[in-house]
Length: 83
Image (cartoon, rainbow, N blue to C red):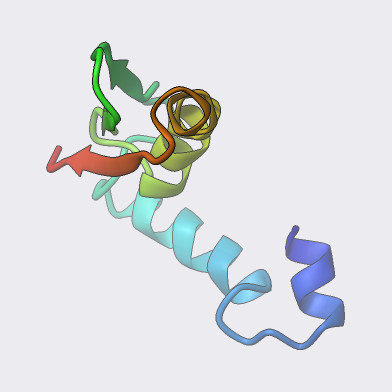
């Protein structure tokens, strides 16, 4: 994805994002080893805890569940716990 954004000259998502992420990890603001956890539910809400990690990883972990719940319920919503 970063290479595509760099080629497309998307300033907010190219190498700038990679450097920003590494700087944030070095500063101890996020845990680079955190594993997001998707909370089980029977409804159309998908809640995921980032466990102190990056919100993008939490979304990637939730995406397959969002797709499944959309197919089941006709829609789905994503929420990330503030951790």
